[in-house]
Length: 272
Image (cartoon, rainbow, N blue to C red; front, top):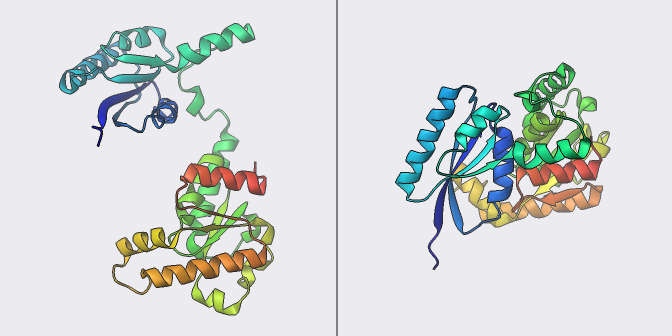
């Protein structure tokens, strides 16, 4: 069995560091044989902080016996130059992408700190907050009021990933997402709960492999009928049968990330 390589990765930013992390994660996931220890250094905006970051990066390299990898999104070129003096493999988001874009567009960028996460468009921010509040209020079938306002209604048996997917849709895209659990009584009736019927166009279903569901439920309620493999197989089979019968679009969440599930939902329901 091959030895897993280990490397330390720093995400250094003058803002939250989310952009640096998003870029880094996209690249690092391509290296399955390497285990990455990830460290975020956000809100770096002074020379002193940049120098402290260099000391911290170098110290980690000495501990590891191998130079760290550093992803930076520092707009301030003076601070970026200091950080890039570290004994590390440094990748700059702005040097890699911004300079070529300036050349292509024939226009200098503003080099303004924090623009990607600013609140310049307050209406978008307000909409996102409203979407989050709506989604929290309509989690797991808490209420069926105001479903006409929903952009999407997720349906699935318990523990298929409805809640985290709903919250991601709200937080990332500002979409109002409600979700409803499918329970044995719904299968016995043989038709959709009455509250969902008139919102059929907004429905999207999730399913999961019974073995995976069994494992998840065992962590929540060990040795219960709810978590038993037989019950998981029954609920999944009945839920999938219902979704096929009712013409509900759905996907298997067993091996998909929340990001992948959400992107599929956006495409299938043509949400913006």
